[in-house]
Length: 134
Image 1: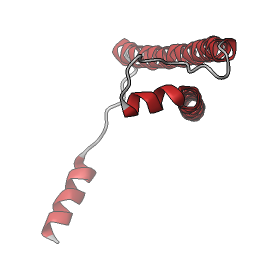
Image 2: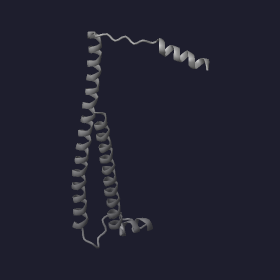
Image 3: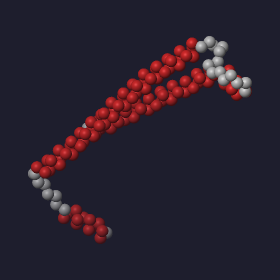
Image 4: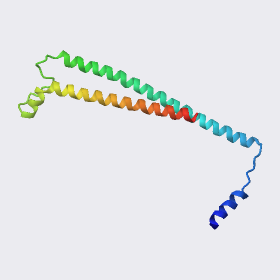
C-alpha cells in the first residue's frame, strides 16, 4: 500500500516540460526519417520476394518442361536409368525408373507449389502489417 502511494506521488511530481525549440523538431524529423527508411526497406523486401517468386515460377516451368520432354523422348519400354549391374535392387530400380522419376518430379513440384504459396501468404501478411502501421 505504501509502495502505491510512493508511485502515485512520483507521477504527480513529474511535470513534463514542453519547449518549442529547434532541437525537438530535429529529433522528430530524424525519427520520421528513420520510419520512412524502414518503410522503404520493407517495400524493397516485398519487391525482392515478388521477383523471387517469379524466378521460381519460370525455373519451375523450364525444368518441368525439360524433364517431361526427356521422359517422353525415351522409348516407353526402355528404362530411364541403367546401371549395367546384375544385382537385385539395381535391377528393380532400373525396371521402375520411369515411375520413380515421375514420382520424384511430382513431389518436387508439390514442394515448390507449397513453398510459393507460403511465400505469397507471408508477403500478404507483410503487406497487411505495413498498411496497418501506415
